[in-house]
Amino acid sequence: MSRRRQIYEGKAKILYEGPEPGTLIQYFKDDATAFNAQKRGVISGKGVLNNRISEHLFTLLGGIGIPHHFIRRLNMREQLVRQVEIIPLEVVVRNVAAGSLSKRLGIEEGTPLPRTILEYYLKDDTLGDPMVTEEHIACFGWCSQEELADIQDLSIRINDFLTGLFAGIGIKLVDFKLEFGRLWEDDWSRVILADEISPDGCRLWDMRSGERLDKDRFRRDLGGEVEAYQEVARRLGLLPEGQETAIFDIDEARKARESR
Ligand code: UDP
Image 1 (cartoon, helix red, strand yellow):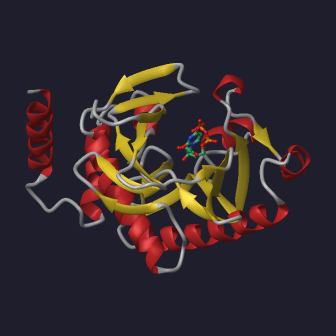
Image 2 (image 1 turned 120 degrees about the vertical axis):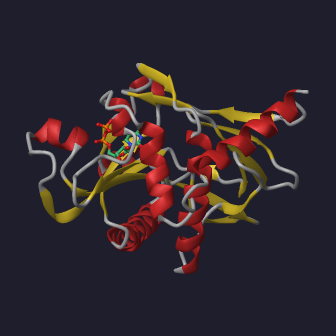
């Protein structure tokens, strides 16, 4: 990995220069952070699972016509993606009250929302990703009105698709975070889905037991993080019975090889 030029290191991923112009390699780490990085930890094996889960979800979304940055998975922890200019907004889609919405507005966690809510947060760690409105977005020009309309349209389509997909495997998609980027082609650009979709940025509740199968296990010290992520992968058909350990053995073997 040291051979490649690192473009950016985030909390859970590293971006390296890709093999061709206009491409990047997205490396999934095991590092976990919460509460604006005030809580830090390592969830061993998380990166492997998120890489695989995100690949699967992006591929399915591509199949229904959602434009996205994913090109192909390269190995257990890396995927090749299109280089985009990231729009500095985190788009949160909510179907059920939880997390900051419940806290801020005093709505009991688990209350179904009568309509889907889209929220926008400015991607700025130093400010703690503050929530912003469409007025702020327009005023400060973080994206154009046309781009925002595309973001809203894509977010709702993604939500409809993923809600059904997860419901089919007994999981309630409570809320999730999306990021979008501009893909430049000559002197015009279009908005495409970027980043990742994984249990790190979604709330996924088992429909029967209500068990949390997402990063809230880490945020709330519930334990069993990797088992929960594995369960999501297993239900998505990505982890046939008995392969839970094999996936990590391969990864460990690769790491050992690379360190030699
Ligand atoms: N989320 C995320 N990154 C962030 C903030 C939120 O991926 O920096 C996701 C989070 O996992 C959840 C949804 O967005 O699925 C809504 O999060 P919320 O606003 O409730 O914030 P939280 O209380 O989780 O920090």
